[in-house]
Image (tube, rainbow, N blue to C red; front, side):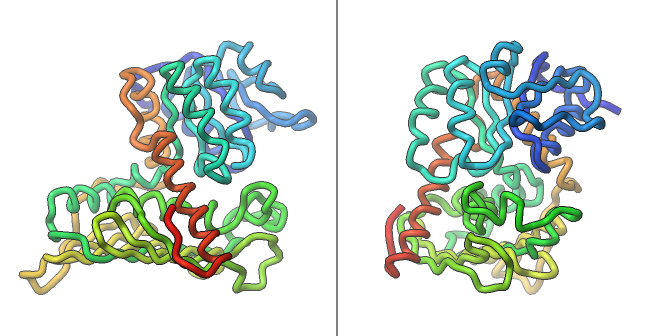
Amino acid sequence: MTETAVHTPENILVAGFGSIGRRHLQTVRAVLPDCRIVVLRRPGQPLPPDVGPKTELVHDIEAAIAAGIDAAIIANPAPLHVATALPLARAGVPLLIEKPLAEAPEGVAPLLEACAAKGVPLQVGYCLRFDPSLRAVKDALEAETIGRVLSLHADVGQYLPDWRPGTDYRQGVSARADLGGGALLELSHEIDYVRWLAGEVTAVAAAVGRLGDLEIDVEDSADLLLTFASGARGTIHLDMLQRPPTRICRIVGSAGALAWDGIRHQARLHRSDTDGWEALPAPASGRDDIFRSQFRHFLEAIRTGRPPLVDGADAACTLSVIAAARRSAAEQRTVSP
């Protein structure tokens, strides 16, 4: 059974064809089964035989633009995002860029300016905002169900060799500094959604480094202590070491608490005037559902011209928090993003 989309581009580019590029291609196929997909890969890299019909291969941006694409999904390594996206933006192509927007906030401004000048959307793939269970937490906060937010703790971890079964983790994007790997960038979903839930960050103190025995040249863990503009405080723990995987968040408010389990896609509420926890209603969802919701949102932004839920400027703020965490760890002091 296929899905009805609000907008039907005829040609979509997928730049990069690692595991996340393949997932995006599958998402496009599920939502827009009749769409022509153009895949951008480095010279010498062919298309695998299972990509499906109406799929073409190009090896440079010029050929991709000449193919008449209507939209683009940028899913190559983070250090290549801006260089890949900028000529597309200047050609007026709407962009969905996989997280993070780049490896550092420096150099992002020309891309944001090009998208603004052409009036095309730039959406960044922080897909957890499309998880119905996390959305239920956001709705509860907006309704002030737990009163004023006092503190927040987020924790995510998964053993890196288990991320992509059947591959050598040492050669993957996550393990290599030259490809934008490391816990801070690869697990930046937590930094994004914490900003979404609790507001902008005004100060960061961090410890970043390698605690485990993985054969990588990037940090395998990071611990951030955040101060928010509201005065609330938060902690985030990121690692590529934990077994079994975990993804949780707990928020303490002046009138209760909220808890989110991102593995089970469940959210709970505890009111200060009650004795127990209650489940927050949210539609059942899995990773495929979340990616499809994110992609449909991108199509809606193209159709309506409304800003995406996670636009370029928003994602650049997450990069600024990451950069502040690196400075804090290096200088052993609290810094402002």
